[in-house]
Image 1 (cartoon, rainbow, N blue to C red):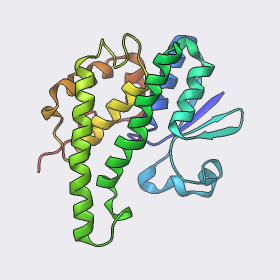
Image 2: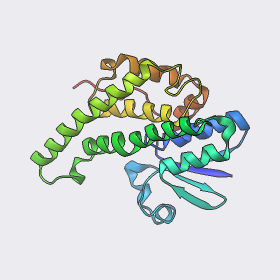
Image 3: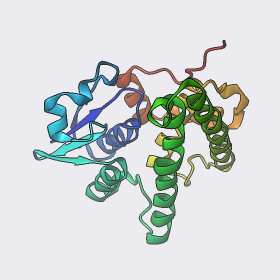
Image 4: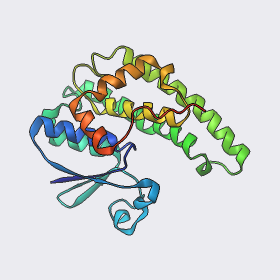
Length: 218
């Protein structure tokens, strides 16, 4: 039995949606355990025993915890290739992992600089500059994903749902939290709406209880 520890609305949505796709393709069951990040549950002794960094996601398989989103998703794909969550061809798989890595080590940290500027600078003025710079970078990264979405057929990597699709959905949700109106990214927004209708994606959205559009006018 696999058990996923996830934070609703966090990047852990990516393996969460993947596990739903695996269930649909193979019948493999899993347990989903929410971690309430806003209440600090990720810093509890029990959770830190699974991941000393206090981050989500964590996948526990046969009592063994696995951390880091790319490692978790690589494991899920290799152990359940029937779901096709990463391409089987070696070169196309490498291309998918390249995009996945960019999302994880570039786009994701850019948003972190917006949302948690206090981790990167002291003083209100310095933090405001961190946010301003990161917001411009994040907007450019979203534009790049929108260019990819314009070529989606129907998914970013072709006719099969991939982990990178779920990550793209997460980023558009986060865009609203950063004050970016998704209506200004219409192609990207339409693509995410199509994604949300995919049963495995819809199941993860429902369990996490999240809204796609988090933007609020000021």
